[in-house]
Image (cartoon, rainbow, N blue to C red; front, side, top):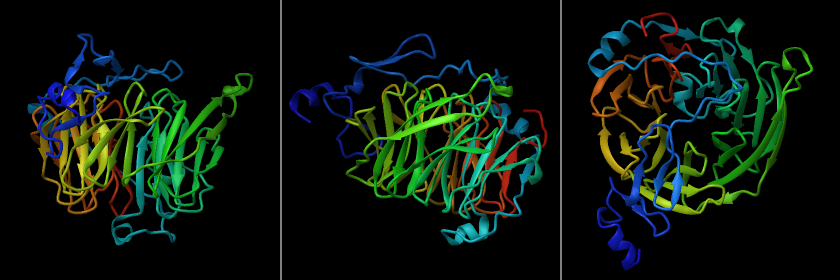
Amino acid sequence: MDDKDADSDAKFEDEGQPGRATTGSAFPFHLFQGRSRPGRTILYSDAAVDFDVVEESPSMAPVSTRRSVPKDRFSALFQTLKTQTYHDPSSRGPGSHSPADKVFGRIRTIAWNPTGHLIATGSADRTLRIWNPDKASVKNSTELRGHTGAIERVAWNPTREAELASCSADGTVRFWDVRSKTCTAEVKTGGEGFTLAWKPDGSEVVVGRKDDALLPITLSSTTPAAQPGGGAMTTRAVASEPIPQQVQTNQTTFSHSGNHLLLTTGTGTVKILAYPSLAPLHTLNAHTSSCFALALSPHGRHLAVGGSDALVTLWDTHDWVCRHALSRITGPVRSVAFSFDGSYVAGGSDEGSGVDIAHTETGEYVHSIPTAGPAPHVAWHPHRYWVAYSGDPMGLKIVGAAGGNL
């Protein structure tokens, strides 16, 4: 950082200190300021970056979102929710990557679709399954077949409730129309993909490979309107050249505008890159060891980061200062997720037991979901206070799907 930048960034501490942000001259985050209308663009000096809520796509059916519950009432109401188990008896073949897969189940990734009417699970034994949360029997689910290796990540198109992407250790990314149960496109990634991030407008996907290269894929999907029900979706997927990163690169996510890509690294930092150039703009010294997971709150006001140090840090995206460090998790944090309103946050780990829920603004723990063992993957319903988690020997669990007052 040159003298000019040192003067302008005087409010931040030294570059190497965790819990503070560092920035280059091209991205003066000390000028970060939000407009008064929620859900609109936040400005970083001369650069516009939208970390706020994404408007609902007109192509999806409208959904009813529950009202927010204050933290002093949350636990009492959340305790009324009943848990449903989704057991897949066919998910017991070869393909386990770790002892935890064998003891606590093989689900490696879970994701809700944008409306919350479906939830996808991907397993180490190559099973990719779509569940209806209202119907727990496996006979009411859909298995999508084609991958020949462990399913590492599943992610839904933010603008199409029936389009799913999956990446696998078999070196491919597949795109699916879950209504017709068909693979609409397949892309060879040139390596083992293990992360997926959709651009908010659904036009691109960025795949992270285990060799620390990022692979952007441009998509165009159409649904023939002349056929009954709109017909089967067709997808054209074109991969760009892979872009190597200089550090171990773990999970990725887009800002809500799609203009920036955030990624966690093995050096304990979170990198913010311009998109599509992937030019580095900003660095958060988030943890003292590897950062694995991250999530941006629905309104863009907070960023949650989980690391190998068993901490979840909560960052205020207005000034990029760490507001809270959540320390109840007993092992490396493999996933973090916000509730639909951003009021609550939960993390998953492959050690210990229980899913602890904290209040985002205060950092106070408000509830703990008891589990049979580690719950590495946690996902909130997009419009309700339901929590899905993996790790149970019987399969996927969803708190709230079996009834309750939330």
